[in-house]
Image: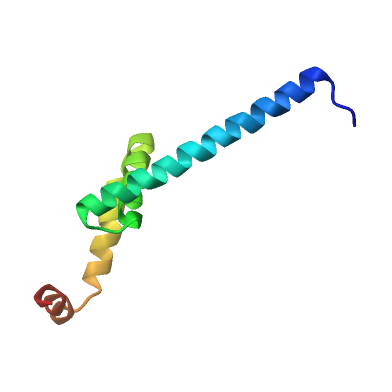
Length: 88
């Protein structure tokens, strides 16, 4: 396969945009890490919050569905076990 000038430029443009995307992703990762440090939580927790907010904004009712799952899980935990966790 031979690449003409136009095809080479298009490929170079894609490569440069991918480099830009990788740079932005690395910066986002650092930003999440900084927020997590500020909040004294794990970066995964901040990422989870961001994900939930994005999903809620995109389609709605995500938070309500998550509450339902949490409520169901809590209902399966014996009262004594939840009391022990709160005391710890």
